[in-house]
Amino acid sequence: MLCDHCGATNEIVGSGPWTGGAIREIDFQAAIADRLPTLEMEETRVSKCPNCAAMVEFDPGVHAAECPFCATPVVTGTGPNRHIKPKGLLPFSLDEKDARKSMTDWLGGLWFAPNGLQDYARKGRKMTGIYVPYWTFDADTRSSYRGEHGTVYYETRRVVRNGKSETVRVAKVRWRPASGNVVRFFDDVLVLASRSLPKRYTDALEPWDLSALEPYQPEFLAGFRAEAYSVELDEGYHEARSYMDNIIMRDVKFDIGGDRQRVHNIDTRISDVTFKHVLLPVWLAAYKYRGKSYRFVVNGRTGAVQGERPWSVWKITFAVILGLIVAAAFGYVAAMNQ
Image (cartoon, rainbow, N blue to C red; front, top):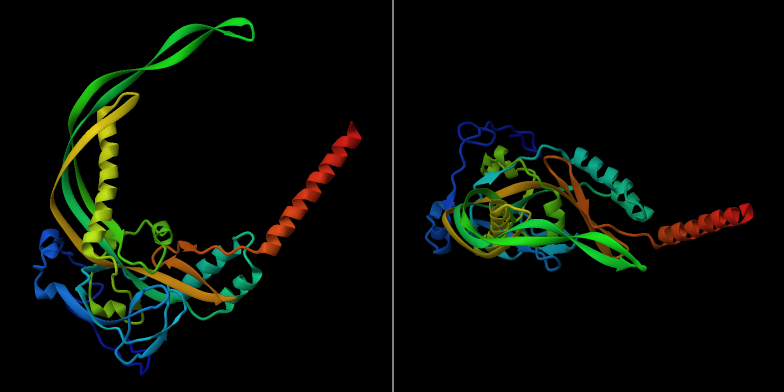
């Protein structure tokens, strides 16, 4: 490791970052019952943004800063935060320069975005590297179901249309009872554990190469910030179960087969539920432009970009007027040729 301030170096050996290794899952029921051993917990100093509610970790010597999620001034003072320690982490693959290029290229491709914001973003301060908290869940499921298997067939009928008799084919469905079992193991169902960024942005940054997760070590955070989770474990599990239920429904319909399916009941037994708290790398830019905050996020591994899309009223008005002029011109030419 290299100190940015004095240039001192410190070799990391043994079980430090970049050495790989297995990442152990944690028993979900033990965590819910507050029976996790002390070594699975940690205490960090965080501050909650008064605007977007981000829980951002700060170095001990920092007492005032700007929220990296919405550019709101924050005075640190929330105090220590005790939480489940991260088990894994995806290191950044893109540096700040590459992330900024991805963001400016994305902004340049936005139609009707204000030129002022594009210029402001291009000339603004550096992006911030943030490790964003997620939960992952594993589970074994076995589901029994009752439903109906539908087979489409056709009947011919004589109908009268516009005074003429015609033969038409009418689709019908023949239903028969169906039941059975489906089994699925869910591995690393990913759930965002932050409330500071719109979920539609972070979801659009997927996929994440979770197979490349490194065992968590604090050294990974050098030069970056980390957000503490604000979505509690039980709430994250509830979202994960909704995802699992949708996949199980798809499996049941596939198992029923046929042209159509009806599902009357699914009874799922879930076992061996485990979880991990992991940190994923995001480059973040938050700009205040004309009194409004705009946020852009870049996947720190792939360079995928998402953000709030601003609109330029003048550009839209000009495009509408131009479209009307072009339409009128075409109409005039068509009328002259008649």
